[in-house]
Length: 214
Ligand code: AMP
Image 1 (spheres, rainbow, N blue to C red):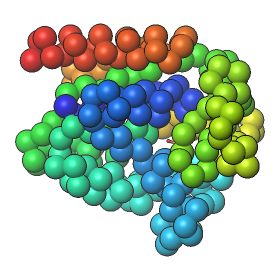
Image 2 (image 1 turned 90 degrees about the vertical axis):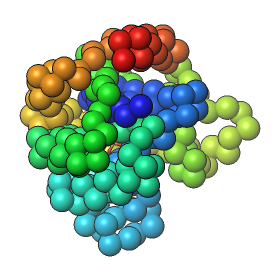
Image 3 (image 1 turned 180 degrees about the vertical axis):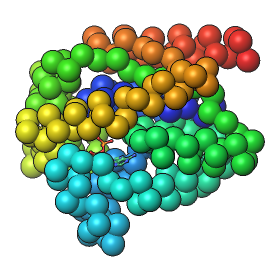
Image 4 (image 1 turned 90 degrees about the horizontal axis):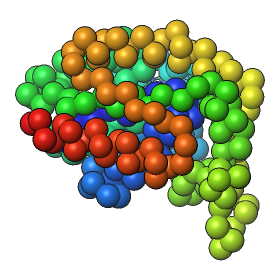
């Protein structure tokens, strides 16, 4: 199965993608995670991406394209869930072309719908483990006691000012892609509010319907 998880920052794309990986054997391809790893290791990509990520801006399309395409090719063009890609018209057009060339089009784009005020609340309380990338929420899903607190940090781009910018970038550049995928009959909108397992059940329902109609 070839999926895109779509939605604003803080919609829960990463959380749901990880569950799909664990429970459905899909490989999670998260361009944000790949970029953060490059920043941490100060690779040439990391150095180029740094100022954009820190400001909550999108990294230029040409830099992200190879990350996504190489990761998909490594998985043999199947059984992946893209998390955070595509985010612009150009990226979506490249992705369509790239997959069509291999005759492996997307099965669905699952858009997680979450209102802005819920997102701001979620992101301000989100914490990540610097080594494992595991995410937590201080109120609903706090780090377990056996996790060393020195590894639990807030992402720089989860600061309120940067979150506001990321949301406005999402509205201007990324949200319009819903129309692109709706026109292609791929868009499935899922209510992204509520508990993690509730949202996962809704995602599974969509996948069951897709399987039934395949
Ligand atoms: P994320 O973890 O998906 O929220 O991504 C963190 C940051 O990485 C974003 O705010 C962007 O600066 C950058 N990034 C991740 N994916 C993309 C993408 N598809 N296009 C452009 N920039 C991206």
